Image 1: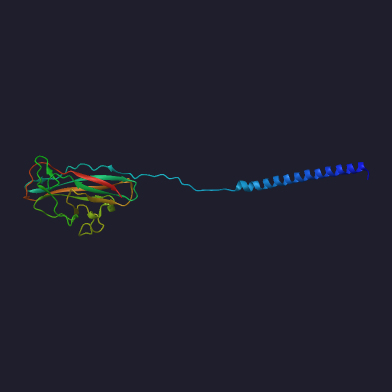
Image 2: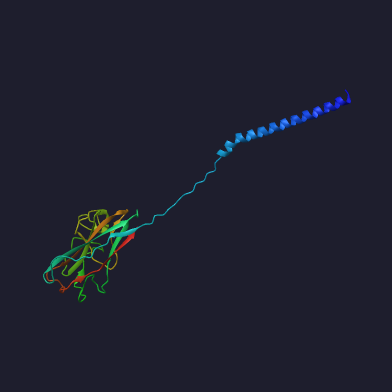
Length: 239
């Protein structure tokens, strides 16, 4: 082989090697690109997730939808020969509290022993009812030689009325019957629970307080001729 042939062969080998190198590089790059595009959907579909919450608080609202009305009792009461007078005050409670509510009543302290006082001279001849049984209402009215002031409670939904004013046909603070004008309670300056409801009242729940003054014949002491007034307060408490 001549020198020129050897040089030509050498150049051909280099060119062939370079060509193979370029082809190999191109093949490798093609395989890399193909691998990426094949793997890309899997990469795109890989998801990391986490939970979170959205919270809002609804506050409890409790109010008297209908306020208790003032009471002007009606009936004929003679200071010497006796008589009776009655009157009612109705109220409606509105609440969104699922646990319900209670209502209690207390009477203003007139600086004396009795809840009612004469408007002119502060007379306390009309006494607080004396028939309570262990601090609870009595079944029926207990007679007295004095003029007496008492109250009872009923509700449109019987179970709203506190157990104290429900009866079993013989006693109050017992049973589940709501009998109008049966369970009478003495007024007190200490709050006394009259309504207990264990659920919400979104459209309102109605209760009624009935007041009564009974004056016997020849009462002792004798109520003087004037108007007598008692002031009561209702307190609404969410459970």
